[in-house]
Image (tube, rainbow, N blue to C red; front, side, top):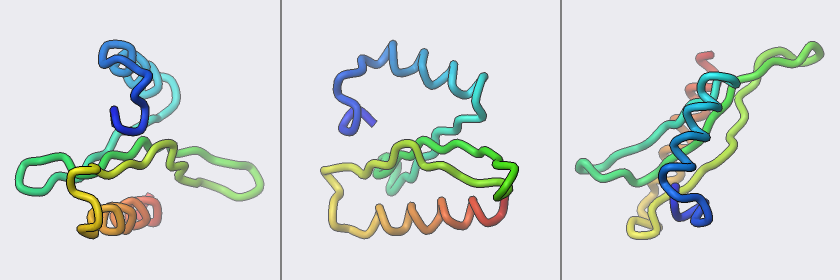
Amino acid sequence: MHQLRPHLDAEAYLAQVLRLQAERDFRLARMTVDGMVVAVAGLRFGEWLHGGRYLEIEDFVTSKDRSSQGHGSAFFDWVTTLAREK
């Protein structure tokens, strides 16, 4: 996630994630390959009166060290499946 938000230090980022999890149904998801994190997403479920439940992708990043290997596409497919299941 640091690749996407380099201005945040680890301590401030962790504090913000914990607050969002407690207050706003925020979830941090990751995809690993061979024990290495290759993609991360910040997800939030919500609901509108006019449209029902939805999934918002707040952040989505893949490892620059593992780019062009299909991880982003596979992870996005997993996020889409999660949204449909919920």
